[in-house]
Image 1 (tube, helix red, strand yellow):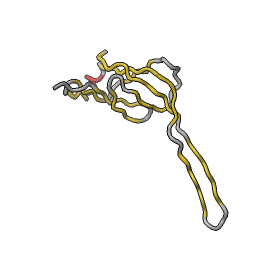
Image 2 (cartoon, helix red, strand yellow):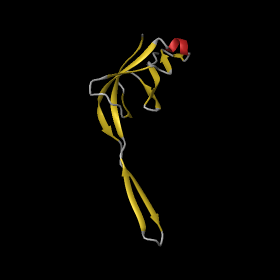
Image 3 (cartoon, helix red, strand yellow):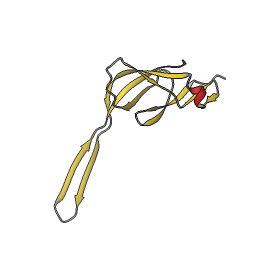
Image 4 (cartoon, rainbow, N blue to C red):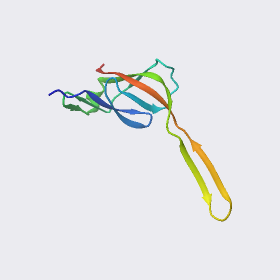
Amino acid sequence: MSFPVYAIVRAGGRQEKVSVDDVLNIDLVADEVGATLKWEPLLVVNDGNVISEAAELGGYLVTAEVIGEAKGPKINILKYKNKTGYKKRLGHRQKYTRVRVTGIAAK
């Protein structure tokens, strides 16, 4: 039984579990489409072996390619106070960068 290779990386203020060819949304970065992002992993699982020591993780690198930009779901905010006629409506839509993980490899 073979185990998939995956890594935990810190991308955009969150930790994400990634493997090769995964597409994920991270917080907006100012790179163009086709640019390469490089992350140092926090944890790597390779064939069932868990690597979490900083000395060993220094030899690994996760690379990703920027696909484009995306927007999250619309969040509606409604503030209301009874009997005063106060109503306020706001909206927010978070912007993300879509990336495709291209490799998890030793340096």
